[in-house]
Amino acid sequence: MCGDCAVESRPDRVAWSDSSARGVLQLMVESVAEMIGFEVAALSVVLEGELHTMAFTGPEEIREQIMGVDPVSVLDPVLAQAETWGRFRFLAGEDYDHDIDGHWAVTMERRADHPDAWHPYDVLLGCLRDDRGDLVGVLSVDRPVSGHRPGATQRRLLERYAAQAERAVLTAFEREALVQQVAQAEAARRIIRSASMPAQASLEAVLAHTHRPLVEGFRASGTWIQVLEPDVGRGYARSRHGELVDLSDRVVDLARQLAPRLWEEQRVLVVADDEEPWLPEGSTADLLDEARRQLAELGVASMLAVPLGVGAGCLGFLVLTRRAEDPPWSSVEVDSALQIGHDLGAALMTSRALERERRLVLELQQLDDYRGQLIATLSHELRTPLTVISGNLEMLADLGLEGPAARYEEAMTRGARRMQKVVDDLLMLARVSHPQHPLVRAPVDLRVVVDDVVALVESTARSKGLDLQVRLDGSELVVRGDAAELDRLLGNLLSNAVKYTSSGGTVTVSAARHGDQVVLAVADDGLGIAEEDQVGLFHAFFRTANPDALSQPGTGLGLAIVERIVDRHEGTVQVASTLGVGTTFTVTLPAV
Image (cartoon, rainbow, N blue to C red; front, side):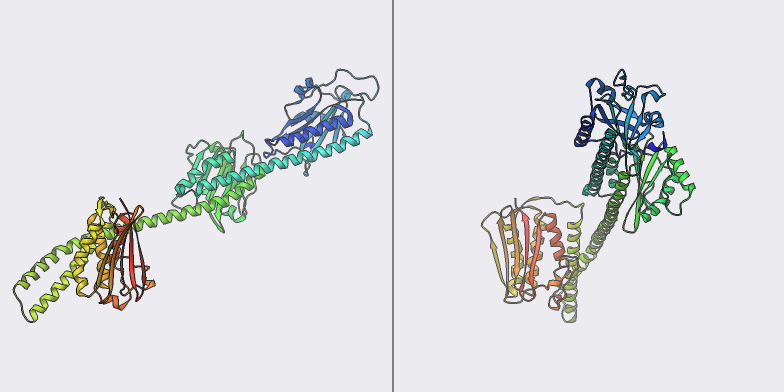
C-alpha cells in the first residue's frame, strides 16, 4: 500500500449499531450526487482493515456490485497511479494498467466522443482521514450527469463535501467508541455487582463469578485472576467456556514480578506477536521474550495484563487472552480494563477481609465450643465430690453438734451449697449454649410456669418484707419451647429482682399476649443498674461494679443463661434500668 494511505487497525470500530450514523452517511452521498451531478456515489468506512460500504445512491442494478466488504488493499494499484486533487484521487481510465479484478464496478459501457468525456474505467475517490492521517473512509463518485470529467468548480464542491463526509465518519466512529465504552463500563459494573453479592463473598466465589462477565465484556478467550498471597496458589485460570487452564510456575512467577510494577505506574501491559509493547521501568527484553514464549505454549495470540489493587497496594493481577483470529485490544478496552483493576481490587480486598473474618469467627466458635466442653467437664467432675461433701455435712448436722463444731458445719454447708449453685449454673449454661443440644419444643403454658416460680420465691420475698405482685393477661399465654428452661429463665429473673430489692419494695411479674407474641416482664424498684454496666449484663461471669450489688452472693451466670434460653426460643430480652430507681427485664417469645 502506498505510504499516504496508511490504515491503522481500529478494533473499536467493528460494528455500527447506531442507525442514525448510517442515515447521516446516506444523506451525505445523496447530497453529493444531487448537488454536484453524479448518478452514482458511495461511502465506505475502514473497519479492521476492510472497506465496508455504508451508504450508496445510484441505479439498483449497480447497488449489488457496490455494497459489500473489500480489503483496503484494493486501493493500492489505483492510488499508486492516481492524480491528487486535494482529498480526492483521480485515475484516468486510459492510464489504468491493471485489470479490474471484481472489486471495482464498471457503471457505464462506453465513453463519449468529446476529449474530457468520462471514461468507463475512470476512478474518482476521496480519502477520508483522521487527525493522525490514517485512512478512515472513502467517498467515491461515478457517472457524471454531464458525461464530462469534473472541472475546477466541481472539484471545489467535491472537496467541501469530502471534508463534511470526513467529519461525519469521524463523528460516527466517536459515537461508536462511546457506545463501546458505555458497554465496557456496564460490564465492569456487572463484574463488581456479581463479586459483591453476599452469597459470593468468599475469595474463590469472587474469582469464579467474575469469569463470565469478563470474557463476555471483553470478547476474551480466557481469564486468569491471581491474588498476590503465598497461600493462594496459581489463582483462577479458565478458558472462555470455563475449563481449567494449567499454568506453569514460570507463568505465575512472571506475573507476580510484573503486577506490582504495573500498579505503581497505573498501566496495563499488552503483549502480542506483531507489536512492541510498553514495558514497566526496569523490565528487560528477556522478560518480554519469556511472556511471548508462555503465550505460545498456551496457544494464545495476545494478552491484556491488568494490575489489581487499592490505594498504594497491589493485591493481584488479571490477564485477559485472545486467539489469533480475534481483533487486537482497543484503547477503549485498555482504559476500561485499568478501571476494572481498581474496582475488582476493591472487591478482592473486601473478600479477603471477609475470609479473615470468617476464619476468626470459626476460631472463636471453636474456642467457645472448647470452653463449653471444658465447663461441662469440670462441672460434672465437681458435682460428684460436692455430692459427697454435702451428704457428709448432712450427716454431721444430724449428730446435733454444738459450739464451734456446729458453726463450722454450718459454714461448710453454706459454702457447699454455693458451690453447688455454681456447678448447676455452669451445667445449665453449657447445656443451653451447646449447638449439638437441640431444643425440643412442646406447648408450654406460661401461667403454670409463673405460678411455680412465684411459689418457690414467695417465702423469700415475704421474709424480706417485699410486695410480690403477679399480673397475668386473661388471654392464652402458651408458647412452644422447653418447660424446664423457661422455668429457669423466669426463676433467674425473679430471684435477682428479690435479691436486689430492699425491704418494703415491690417486685412485679406480668405476662400478656400481644398479637402473635407473649410478653413476659419482671420489674422491681430495687438497686437498679448503672448504664455502663448494662452493656455487659448478659455476659457470663459479669458482675456489676456497684458495691451494694456485690454484697449479694452470685455467680454472674444467671443473666447469661437467660439470654441463651431466650435465643434458643427465638425470642428477645431487653433491660430498662435506672440506678437507684429499679429494673425491668422484658422477654418476648413467639406465641402458639
